Length: 81
Image (tube, rainbow, N blue to C red):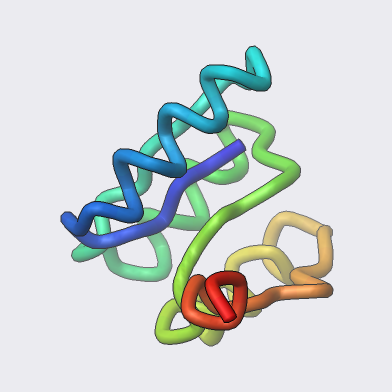
């Protein structure tokens, strides 16, 4: 699982939630360019990304490049509602 979030309180909540699930967590720096995110996702074999709606476009490009789809993406604010 990858966390593609800026420095915000939701990052800490998401990180500790993944630890409770015993998931291997990879943090993606929010200022990475699409090519850097693509390399990280591919190298780590990431299957799930928790992110904000603002990063969806970058992920669509990255998941397409590594042969996966970014379906069911949902913003963090939608999850709170």
